[in-house]
Image (cartoon, rainbow, N blue to C red):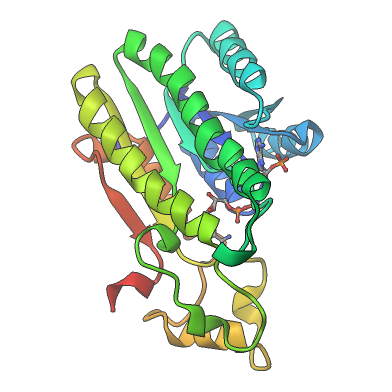
Length: 262
Ligand SMILES: NC(=O)c1ccc[n+]([C@@H]2O[C@H](COP(=O)([O-])OP(=O)(O)OC[C@H]3O[C@@H](n4cnc5c(N)ncnc54)[C@H](OP(=O)(O)O)[C@@H]3O)[C@@H](O)[C@H]2O)c1
């Protein structure tokens, strides 16, 4: 079991105080890592870092705006100055600003989302990988989605008015290719890159019974019959972040209860 440990590894989780960010961050901390929880709402990140630290684990909350290149550079420099290395980067943050269907979206709305989800993610990965290359070790985990592995299933939304926006499919499919590019280029520098593509997750959503067309449809179309639970992302993250997966790179690990296996 020692290969699953992450003792004193420095791990960044973007959006680490968000919905999936919280279980990802605490899982890394439970495995022994020093977790840097980063997003625009610095107080939210610091608050969650304090909650982790209160369990005798290691974490720090920091400001990061993926829409701002300067912020990205200052952030990576600060971590390197403070800790002297970056071992793990989890690209988990997502902006849903300007998410729309194809005919409804404006150029500005498209570009707003891309600035964060595509350009910002690329710039942060670029800054981190420069350090990892010098270290000759590193591990990138990109949080994708089932929407980046199969096309959107529009009938699942029924008459709820919900949709799966074009931006999301575009970003999440790109993330898989981005992951494979990094894996193939940086393998020789002992840097691994993998994707985790989760299925739907939301607080309390598994407890909703009846009267919600989307929830019912989604559960029916998932072989395991439910949305992701609070802990479902933890094991896959630890596996990919640790030496337990030392020979795994360029992989897209589906954590979706079987949604994509039909
Ligand atoms: N929830 C699901 O059902 C689901 C399913 C499949 C995949 N996923 C994936 O899981 C990941 C997390 O999603 P989530 O549902 O947990 O979302 P969430 O709770 O909305 O979290 C998104 C995080 O991104 C951060 N963020 C947004 N814009 C940012 C920026 N400009 N700079 C830095 N951070 C920024 C937000 O923090 P601030 O507002 O403080 O910046 C927030 O913490 C995403 O990659 C998503 O695609 C989610």
